[in-house]
Image (cartoon, rainbow, N blue to C red; front, side, top):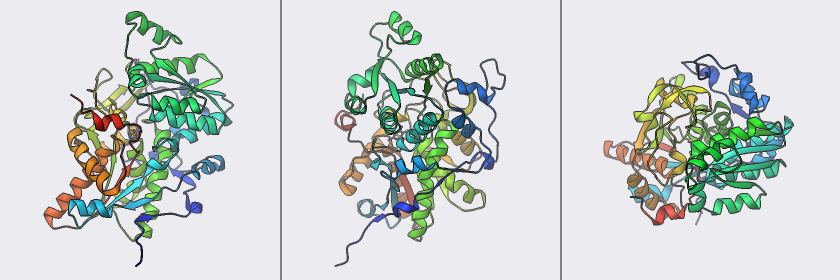
Length: 428
Ligand SMILES: *Cc1c(COP(=O)(O)O)cnc(C)c1O
């Protein structure tokens, strides 16, 4: 009996050797970043905390940017990742449509964040920086950057939101194995942290505060830069490796996608999937591109488009994006990576010009499809990824009702093996 391989694997030597920059193609060009007084911020201002090569990428007008060899070598640890036909999930749903998932959970950190972490560590290394400072919420980004810092021999300090550190200590274990220094935020290390502790010695911390601590450290030390895991243009650029591989793999399977889905926190895995298909859509290809966000943090479906700060402390520049406002505190949900008040300016522009559309999904609904996926494909998805999974399943079910057969692809942005508490204890 012939055995069916549901994974469409690309050979190692077919890892895409470039990233795709969507900036020159956006129908509505992005406005400049702005200072708090409303004046345009010169790109060089970002060099206080980022290396010049990443600042160049942030505002680049080059449609294609070559991936340097040392980053390709690092990517080759786990890339190309398989695109898998979820045949048993289709059967469990009772649909004739074809459902595929791009498995980004196979990276060393267990999520797509390694794609940009390795690139950012490399560009800091070649710029002569010796240390990185960053923040992390649930720990996915901190883990990815700790591994990347180890690979490129950089020191790293991670400010981890205190309440998350207490609830999810295992990612700290991995970061410590990589010799990263992990501090509970608020910490005694920075003015922002000391001020927060003076106000409330038992402060649980927040992502906004942890960002403030990491940025303060990077701005005050010449040997140290800051790194961000989502939202910014250069982060989305690095993630376009995902969509490029998907495109090659769909071509191998003779498929044209009717619908592409990724979950949306700050926009990086969504942008990474979408960008390589945006040019096709602009040329008239009928592919629906959906960003799945939680109903508890409805940035794209309910937020306003305009200039806003990226963090609670208002330390970042003002960026043009969909936002619920920097003071919006999303309710506690298990998908910690989707609890962000803003959105990437690139994704915001794609939504604004209707190239892509947002959809909100409730935690209950996401959990329902998590169980179905786990019981049919035998993988525990990250709580974030389950939002994309749910929308993809609902799409296939809707097609079935219409008597239509389609092709839907979603990104499994990470596995949930370090988020098992999320699947044990329902939130209030
Ligand atoms: C961080 C994270 C997300 C959300 O971030 P984006 O920038 O929106 O992609 C989604 N899934 C996983 C597994 C994550 O770690």
